[in-house]
Image (cartoon, rainbow, N blue to C red; front, side, top):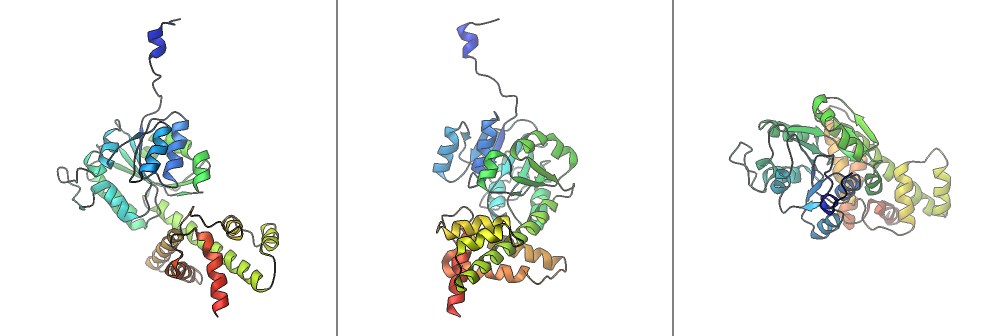
Length: 323
């Protein structure tokens, strides 16, 4: 056995290929931390210096631009985009100038300028299916693959690998990155090969989440109007037919006065709007979706945009008192 000081000083080489994250916010940071804890080399890019410092302390390499992060990937490498909306996705890939994606014309700060044929971008934001499709088609022009993979579960579940990933994309591409998908999520739902079906599934889920949240907040606002104790009422709901995960999670925080943003009100406002637009595009009209989207829009217009969506309870309590 070689026990020389030189041999001991040689760092271990990771068995995993590097993964690049663009966007290390509430979900991207714990996802990157999850991979780092499991020995993956991780490269990151984000506008928030504090978050970059946090993930660098865990072992990630920080880059100034998405292009630099993309350049750190090896053959067949994976970039994970965890930003907020479709406009930010386009900026990550092609820069603020909106430069054409043809070789030689891409904005040099955009990831597309450094991505190579055979590499893959995994799209995690909640965006319209048409945007997912157009992003994938544009990258396909230069031989770059896409995996449509919206996520659900929140930062804690992202950090411990129990969040959900709703995955759609060509089977060989998804299979090539099965190890990193499994490392990120113990609940990987493979929805088929059509890019966009992940986005469609996420909008269906988030519309129901929005309906459940508004319903839970309305029920507790009613309990307050009836002179009932909110905590005790929620105890009953959680063990009865009215229970929902998001209702319990958000209303417990609301009753405690904890409105520090984990999920800004604007996110479900965006998601319910996108879901109702997708419904309209499909020729479907239900009784609750548009009403729910309108409630989230009104809450944002009421000044609650930067608060956690648990603030829906306070909004509906004020709404009841104003009538």
